[in-house]
Image (tube, rainbow, N blue to C red):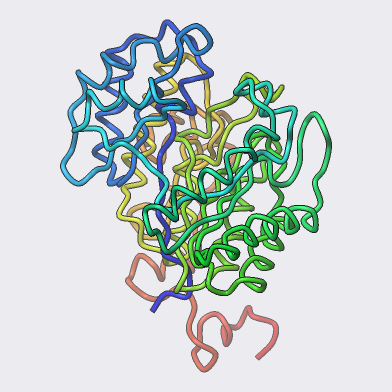
Length: 393
């Protein structure tokens, strides 16, 4: 049995990524990328946003994308819609789109009043004004379970750092409103649009929520990566929660994405999907996702948008673990990221590189692997512990 939570992963590259890129990227290129993503094993893919093209021209042709792409059975496709008009537009394409709704009625707000004013032309106070309505509607529908949440949970580019103590007070206030009407809180959502996440703060936040309310067993984290902390923060959440919990995470292939309202633009980014899936697989968490196909998608996205993206596994490749994936000991110098693509494209990637070795490289360790032997014997074995060249016998 896994010691980790059940993880639901959502790919946001077609929305969070494309919304900050050139509005003139061809629809056919976007459709090609979306179809390729569908073949990776990803179970949840966001295809774009139904929003005003006046402010997000990159999403102006979302209708064409949804019409032209090839849905794959078993994959859930969603789109962002921020208001009732957006929802109605999306409904016209359901199926193949699934109209995404929060599983739980949720009390939530942005901790940064400035960001929400810039982003949605509303105030934090206006967000909070809806709480009684949300509670009343839940009562009318006889809903038994609900959620709490916060966006800009750990800090703001406009207001500074937010202590976890303050976050917990906000969540406590929300929880108390559900308590008053006898509706059980089982979910907590924490967002981070301005890249203030940090593994220590994420770990503390998740731990304290679980400590305060053990019945909360569903968490949703939306982590941005402007300060290169999203992957580490996701790891902190994964290792803090247990097998009885569910954790929703999201990211983008290549780690691209950004928000024009937060002040970091394309530097905002998200955890690269290929990096986080690679990490989870190495932790023993089965994702059902083909990392090699994800890398193909990253390279396709880089071709489409015309620049290099931010992920690492797409550049260095997955960790080589089997004999057929190990690097050639006698390869020449590998200096550029194009040469490093040899893990996928073959030895031709580094052909003609500097070769400084007078004699071919050999190793008794590699010899063992090529004979089908384990790299190291156990403590009672001979290799390398009892070899003549090993100092301690």
